[in-house]
Amino acid sequence: MAPSDEGIQNIDRLIHEPSRLTIMMHLYVVESADFQFLQHQTAMTPGNLSSHLRKLEDAGYVEVTKEFVDRTPHTALKLTRKGRDAFKQYRRNVKQFIDKLPE
Amino acid sequence: MAPSDEGIQNIDRLIHEPSRLTIMMHLYVVESADFQFLQHQTAMTPGNLSSHLRKLEDAGYVEVTKEFVDRTPHTALKLTRKGRDAFKQYRRNVKQFIDKLPE
Image 1: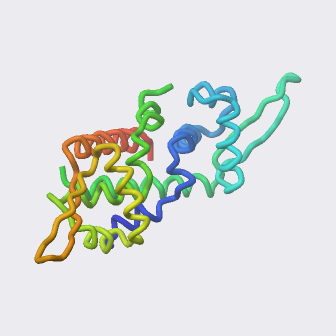
Image 2: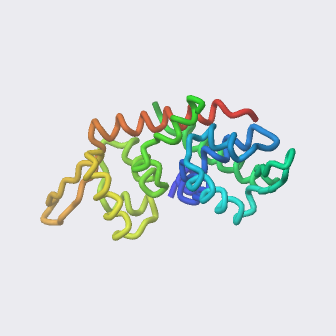
């Protein structure tokens, strides 16, 4: 098995799933995001977004903070250090695979 | 939704699955491959490889040819034109997503 294969077959499947990849990508470029903002950005339903966020939270990749701003409940989401590192590793693996392929 | 998102959320999920991505990658770089050779290259079990190949065949991405060489049965696998184009499109989408992310 070629090294580039191992990169793909051992890739982080939690991040690889397209909806979660989109979520991770959005959280990667910000310090923190509001649930509704993220929902708008990803064009996902609230239920679908919640479900994927729970999996990312369970893996320790995303930190979920519920808070009140002017008496209105807000859910703030951010990547943890672990999540940020995992995403960087995922990106390295994918880039390596892409770069190795001939045109 | 940003353009790079659409690329990911509408990505070809048939190819995106890591085992099938590995198979497609191997077939992309050759004219044709023998089943056993491909199994060795991908380090997959025969059953697992067959199952993924069937899905790729059903989508019209892979052409499966059973033949006898010196009275021994051989299964030859190759990407169809459609499969090759789909893989190129997949790669373009992933590359676009990777390139747009900040370090």
